[in-house]
Length: 446
Image (cartoon, rainbow, N blue to C red; front, top):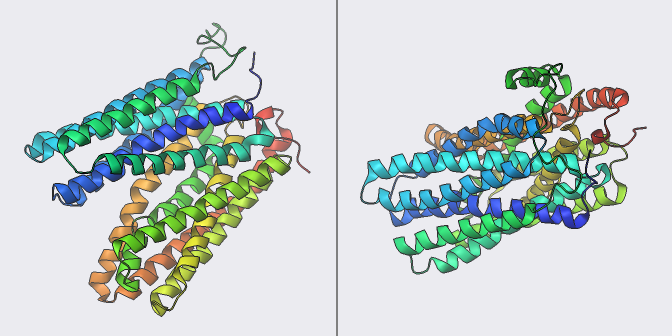
C-alpha cells in the first residue's frame, strides 16, 4: 500500500538531508582543497584529483538505486549513505593532516576517504531523490525540487561560514574538530529528517517476490532503462547539460582576476552575485510550479529549455566581455548566468522526478541512479576541461582574452545543444505519458 503524498513540512524535512549533504561535501571539496594548496603548499592538481575521484565513485549510483528499489524502502539507504559520507569526511580531514608529514600514506588514506565520500553521496543522494519522486504529489514537484536544492545551498553557505570562523587560527587539531563537528551534526540532522519519513502504510520490510515473479537482476533492470527511448534521451541530456554547467565553475573567478583586475575578495563577491542569481531562478521556478502545478508535464521541460538558452546567452555575454574588457557590465552578466542556471537546474530536477517512474514498472531508484551517474561523470570531466582548456589555449595562443572567448563560446554551444536535446524529450514524453496510467508521471496533458 502506498503512503499519502508528502506535505510541505515533509518536503522541507527531507530538504534537511540535502542541507546536511551539502554542508559535509562543501567541507571536503572546498575547505580541504584550500588547506592542501595554501596551508600545506601541495600542487593544486592533487586535491583536484581527489575531487574527481569522488565523482568517479558516484558512477555507482545506479547500484544504490537498485538496492533501494528492491525492498521499496529508501530511508535505510539514506541513513547508511550519510553515515559513510560523515565518516569519510573525518577520514579525509585526518588524511589531509597526515599528508603534510607522510605524503604517501596520507594520499592513500585520502583516496579511501574520497571513495567513501563519493559512495556516501551516491547512496544517500540517489535514494533521497527516489523517495521524493515517489512521495511528492505531481503538482508539488517543481516546488519540491526548488526547496530541496535551495536548502542544499543554504547548507553549503552555513557550513562555509561556520567552518571558516572556527578554523581561525588554523591548526591541524582545529581542522579535525571542525570536520568531526560538521560530520556529526549532518548525520544527526539526517536521522531527524528521515524519522518516519516514509509514513504509515509504507512497506516496512523488503518485499518477498513470489516464485512466479522472481526479482529482476540489476543487469536486466539496466537493460530495460537502456532500451527506453525517453530514459536514454534524458540520460544524454543530463550528461551534456551538466558538462556545460560544470565547465564554467572553475574559470569565472580567474577570468575576473585576469581580465578585469579584480582582487580575490572582489571575485568572491562576483561569485556571490552568481549564486544569488541561481537562488532567484530556483525560487521563481519553484513558485510558478507551486502555482500552476504539473498539469502539463511538458511545462517543466520547456523551462529547462529556457534555462539552457538563457545560460548560453549569458555565456555569449561573457565571451563578449573577454574582448571588451573592464568596460563590460560584468556583474549583471554573471547574475543573468546564475539566474538562467538556477532555472535550468531546478526545472531539470523537477522533470527528473516526474520521469523517474516512467515505464511499465517502477524503477525510480535505478533511473535516478543512472541520471545521477551521468551528472557525476559530467562534473568530473567538465570542471577539468574548462580549467585545462583555458590554460592550454593561453599557452598556444598567447592571448588570454581569446582563450576565454573560445572557452565561453564552446560552453554556450554545449548549452544550446542541451536545449535541442531537451526539446527532443517532449515528443517521446508525450507518447509515453499518453499511454501510461502510472500516477507518478503527472497529470493529464492537453
